Image 1: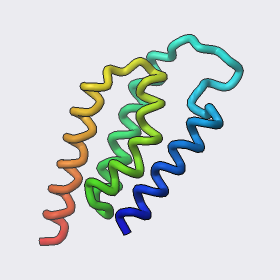
Image 2: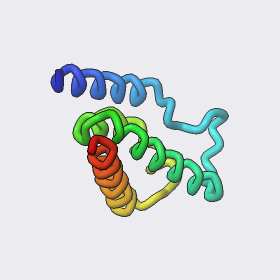
Image 3: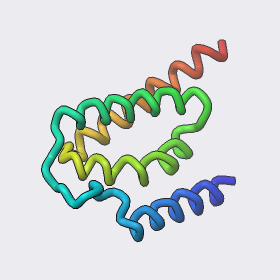
Length: 101
């Protein structure tokens, strides 16, 4: 099962990479700072929601191929994004444990 998740995440990442969908439509490459904070917040909320149903490794394999091109596009520091990503995953794991009790 884990190998199928890895295969799906890798395939999806390659398709996005080859189709160049991470680029902004219209070729406009100017940064959009106000939108970046909202996108990052939505990513974190989705991680917390997914963490209630999916294990951490599976969640990383599903979301990181989608999130990392967006993080690079908006110019967010990847180390800080990684820290926030891991904190949200741990928070979701703790919420799942409390809901099971």
